[in-house]
Image (tube, rainbow, N blue to C red; front, side, top):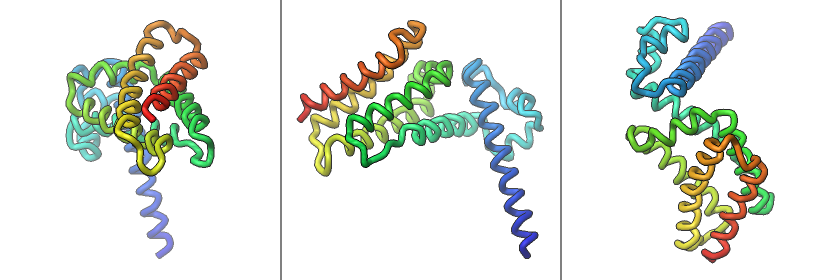
Amino acid sequence: MASLRTRRAFRRLEVEARRQQLLETGARLFTERGYEDVSMSEVAAAAGISKGLLYHYFPGKRAFFAATLEAAAQELRALTVTDPDLPALEQLTAAVDAYLGWIEAHSESYARLLHSAGALADVASLVQRVRDETAERIVAGLGGDEPSPALRCAVHGWLWFMDGACLQWLQAGREPPRERLRELLVGTLAAAAGLAV
């Protein structure tokens, strides 16, 4: 009986490892060429599997693309989790620094994601969901049990500002330096939150 459980666990691990490999392959191809220019046949060939096996994991290109976006969102969410025992400003600084680090490591994906948000409903809904979840985390950290509507407006507006600033930063060759951008972003939210009180 133990050997059967071991085989099932091993098989499950293989399935998850294969799925992760496919997501990484898809993310790379979608980043390089965009959603419209990538076919499922190309993904299968790049992953070294049959197209049929790819469809075993993902029912279609749209679902596969959505899964690559979700994987990136989960990675980013995990990276920006902070220690709730730290003061709010330290938590914010650590989360912004982690976010900027992720953007540096995935600059092409990040830029393409934001630029395609208006064209693809899946991208737009994912970006909005991530913004909403992030805003709730920030509001909870800054506003206590009963955050004001003004604080919610400030935080949601700041997240849009942050993406605009980060895109500009990438387009300008990562100028100003990352530490200066982090200070600017943290200072902007701190000032907006102060006005919202």
